[in-house]
Image (cartoon, rainbow over all chains, first blue to last red; front, side, top):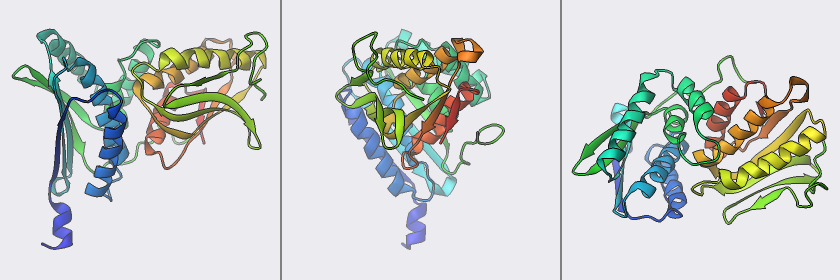
Length: 171
Length: 133
């Protein structure tokens, strides 16, 4: 196989773990470095590392002490990247998250939704900003699915994206 | 702009230091700035950072500051819960009467690529309060 062909091959990573909170930093660093190797010309590694970090921080406290699974798919040939993180969940947890993702996706403008989340998320308690941050800053779409008592959050989008710019230019 | 590193009214320095991150008001050859270092990734960092931001804010208002440098150059990462401290800061500035408002000028690290998009979003939230350097 030529080097050029090798660079177009899909690259998958799956990890199953029961990580304590402190390991999320290590995971973010690993994903950043993995993605920089998987697609060096895409400049997506920081955004994908941020996505994994935020989704893991949502999944770990809600995992009911069961395993959390991370899947990363980098597919240069079809210009696609996807991050999926799954954890055990109750009906109520799944329904609450699904409703939140549905509300978020009703706003087509990711920045407007993010700004509203900044306004509305309580300042002194955790939560309420991570998904909006992924959608805008990492330029990924989000969905949620459920199978066998586990919920999976899917973050997916193009591998090559334009850098985000301020409306009206740099201040 | 001058922020005392130890406000007389509280008797405690304006700084916080956790295992993975710290924040403080520093003055050196490069001037006075509010510096954040390390990795802000604990479950609820706003519990630590919001009181810090409140203390810095009070001193800036007392000093009638027009702008403060916020140094992210040694900040490896900040999770969304930690990010709320900066949203809280902007909200505090926006609550001030217009004449008392000051600006946040962020010093970023180009090698930490998340900073660019996060600060971009923050500058959209605090349109008249945030500039990025």
